[in-house]
Image (cartoon, rainbow, N blue to C red; front, side, top):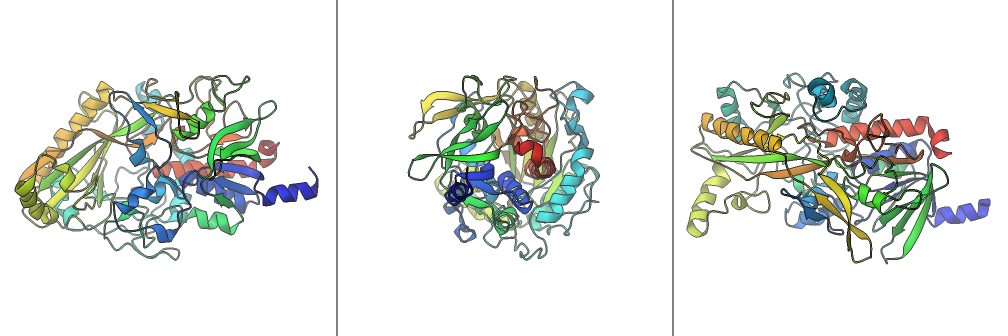
Length: 531
């Protein structure tokens, strides 16, 4: 291509060094680091071009930030709540994430070697620790590393912990009564002003995206850095397939723009950072004669081993006032005393408690909706007490990877003619036993803390992991430890889909650390990657 034609193509957005699909946590981080290194980066996002001014402290209004694209068809005994867990637009799911950022434990990386269950990661905790440390400094984490006696080795947090308020103090008494330890939740939320962003005001609106910018979301962390170094972000651009090139290379992506026109973006490298479900959907839809089962699917494992966390929500009414609307959406305190894989009799896997999240009177995670058994005056009397005296916490139980939990293409198509994804999900009996153990323990904790009434929710799920597993063996995984597809020298995958196992910790911190490690690898090996 001549210099003049290349310049015109660049102006039209048809050429890039790196095409990144998805402007969420991993996509924005990779865009920032690659652009800083001098690469021309174009980020294509299927959803809207959210700006910071679009964030509003209103749970109903904030539903706009949840998935708004083509439906994901549910299947299995325990269907996954994709619409709630996924993001839509600039910032992705991390725009409205709650901000709890614990690290995975060393044991999480070696469950096959240590216990003969699940898979080993192709890296160990020591490989990822420097990236955890660097990310927490870049985005800002609050916490108390010494109080987290179960936390693996790592640098202290750059900010002191968030405050523990009345609800946290109340629920913590139950843990102490049973000899269990708690610590302030490690949070991607400012406890003090940090890098020009203000400290948290504890009004409990993290799920709405944090209008004051105390929560570390991509619009206040990596997207500004990416823009400052020349990265281009395009909203309303739905990538439908990766364009296969000659040999073991790809040469760009095909996408539908806001008007529904099919366009191409040519690139020397492609990074899929859409979501755990959408990345396999794109790769399956990129099948060709050379890749009949889907691009990057020589192993036949694309879309398989999807994982989530089994959640139990515990509620109780206390005598003292807890002011449950105050605080942060994630939690005030954390407990990993039962995180060990064999710590639950009769079940295998890790689990964690997130203690005293802020809770509002209504909407999906609200006070009223967790008592669907009450109506009329009974509900009114309950609400009069609960808005002042409620305590709550959430337990996370690990799900082990199972091949039948998978993402696949459906014969059904969306309004634009693109095949829909179908997500099969069923919890194993082992996970259900782990979950039941948490439900029983949660009741004991609240009763020991003086709750006069205790109840729990049915099993629910949160977080997406797996589907594009990383590993050393190309026959048993989709990518290497940097997210590079084994089959293709210049196609990378980023996000929680790389996780070989789920652990019980929230995945956002870990996927940031993996993305930063991938970015540095791409920068250092750019001549080989770019061809």
